[in-house]
View 1 (cartoon, one colour):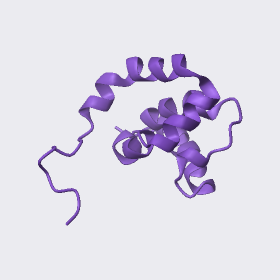
View 2 (cartoon, helix red, strand yellow):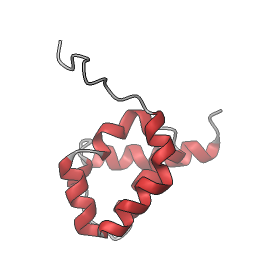
View 3 (cartoon, one colour):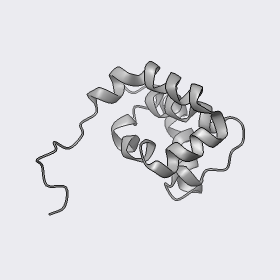
View 4 (cartoon, one colour):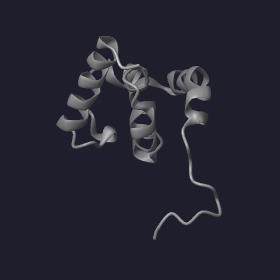
Length: 97
């Protein structure tokens, strides 16, 4: 069910993505967004859409630089079940056509 709460988070996430052309690794560290981006993405119901962007080496490096390893570990702990539900390609599956 899509509600006003989700709409607020969706607008927030989409504005950040628009501002940085979808490159989450290029987001300027404002001492907030790297701590809460995954929370807003999940609350907006956009985890499927942005999962791949959250696991690029560039994003992981940017998040680690901004927040340190403890926050990254906490995200993985908090959102593990949600992230596991999001489909990832099978090792034997062709990624490129």
